[in-house]
Image (cartoon, helix red, strand yellow):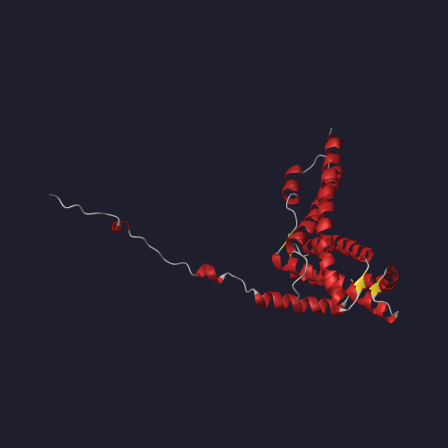
Length: 103
Length: 135
């Protein structure tokens, strides 16, 4: 593993934002569905947000780093084949579909 | 009133999301530039920004996947198996994640052993008792 990767705290913050948003949405939907019944049972279950352990975060950082490095490497290959030494939009366009399928 | 507050929340969330996106972009730039240098390639700026946005979207998608996987397993906490599972479509990717996860596990073994080193300090209270001789 190289020195520069993503900061696990940053990734945690991003994940938690998504989880908070989804929890809020879920709560809203549930409130619509069950207007009156079982308020007590629902709240205790809903309020706990998803969390991630430290290893999982580090591994996620690694996964995202792989995504970025793959994108650059594949685009670099195309750029090289075209005899250019700068990666431009067209090179990224060429590799993008397969990249998105691979991740 | 309620909708106003909700709108404020949304705005705040939006700005938090913006900050995270910027921090994410800075990390991406350094990773991408290091990778470009390794390949002897320059990368035009919009491309790095584009890759960064893609990776950010991917991170958000990943968060959703991981939550669903953890929930499906009846857990509230995401662990490494969930992350590896998220790459199940790509055997190579899953294999390299698995090897990274083994590395991580080997590097930092659980620090539970510290707990057993409980020193038994049974302070005997009579140590504090001073016998004062009667004059």
